[in-house]
Amino acid sequence: MSAVKALLARKPTVLKVLSASGQLGYGIPEQALAAGLAREPDFIGCDMGSVDPGPVYLGSGEMATSPSITKRDLAAVLLGARKLNVPLIIGTAGTAGAAPHLEATLDMIREIAREQNLHFRLATIRSDLTATRVGQALSAGELKALGGTLPVTQADLDACAHLVGQIGCAPFERALALEPDVIIAGRACDTAVFASLPKILGFDMANVMHMAKIIECTSICCEPGGRDAMLATLDAKGFALESMNPARRATPLSVAAHSLYEQADPISFTEPDGTLRVDAARYTALDERRTHVTGASWQPATRTTIKVEGSALVGHRAVLLAGTADPRFIEQLRSILATVEQTTRSLVPGDYEIYPRLYGLDGVALWTQAPGISAAREVFILIEIIACAPELAMAAAKTFKQFLLHQGFSGRQCTGGNIAFPFTPPELVGGPAYRFAAYHVMPADDHEQLFPVSLEQI
Image (cartoon, rainbow, N blue to C red; front, side, top):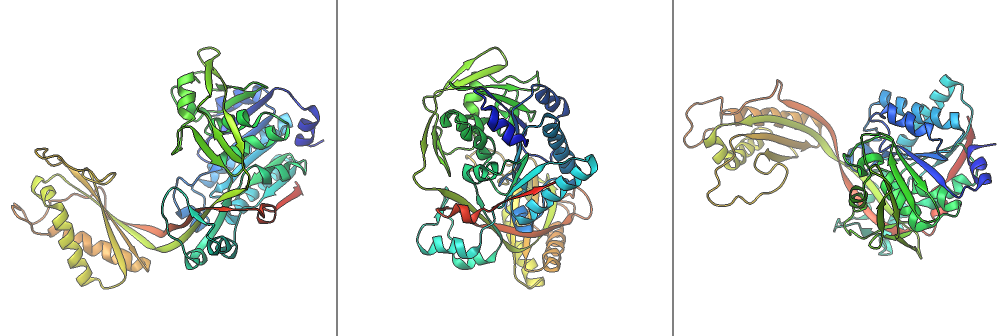
């Protein structure tokens, strides 16, 4: 009997959910995972990706994580789930969840199974979208920028190397209906990984989604925060949270704070399946390490919507790294950089953009310096160059370096040595550069056709 079939047959009234990793591929703390497995969870969930690393991984089709560490993490959760014969559900395979990421993850899973002589039912959910389908929403005026005003055209969509839709619970429910042991999904909402099975089992969706929202990041909701495995125990009234690392405490304050994580609105957030409100939630300490949560509310969606993510190539990147502690140089740094850019463009013709990042001045944020505050003592200079070809980007970076090193300025006391390089060469190949051409929401009434589910016997 498959792990999902066995769980559905039991119909537990109390469900133990183990979140094994906030993002597979960066290493799983082994002792905490072992402690979680020893508690005999009813299923194991793992997020494997995020939009946080930016558009490059979606565009390139590569993982953000080390292949060897990723395989090791996959082996740890797969072996743990098979030993207990409980479902394993993984979302946003391979960092970005597009076809190449999903295929690379599936290849690792199959390889681990061969090496460990494992046999199980594997369900796969694909989340790739076509530019034509997203373009239909654009033409209908139904493609809305998420949290901003990112303009998009059909040409932008056509230029995307990959387009994915962030799936909610429904595709997972269709995969669960196939009674697998393991589910590997493409791009997915983190909550859907943990909410789909409890939803099928009939648990209250407000508690289910609130639980899923918190535990997908494992022990970040604790004091002190960490990435250790997290156990949620879901009951008829709410859910209890406990880190599998005894050094971390899930307190009412820390758990409530994490309920606001990554949200523009502190009291509600919307998923493809509906909207969760946490303004009436209650957080009660069970002891110094555990908190029980109740009181959230859930409004089911009247129409399924999905977030669309698309990444398009914009060019090839080179970076120049330097620093300075010369006060006169720092005072005139912006005008110096402007002059050096003019010189570089006159000597290296071609199509490229130059982006200076001045850490210590405005590399992280655009600060407004109050009158009377002295200039920074030292500044780290990062010059990003994006060109139509790698050779052109590097040529511009090398020329920029040489003229920055010797550029004259008022009050200069020597003709060189006003900047320092952290290593040599200070110019680095940055690889292909991508941008989010699509970061929008669209209706997906046809989600059953958009996100196919398949089953294979391993």
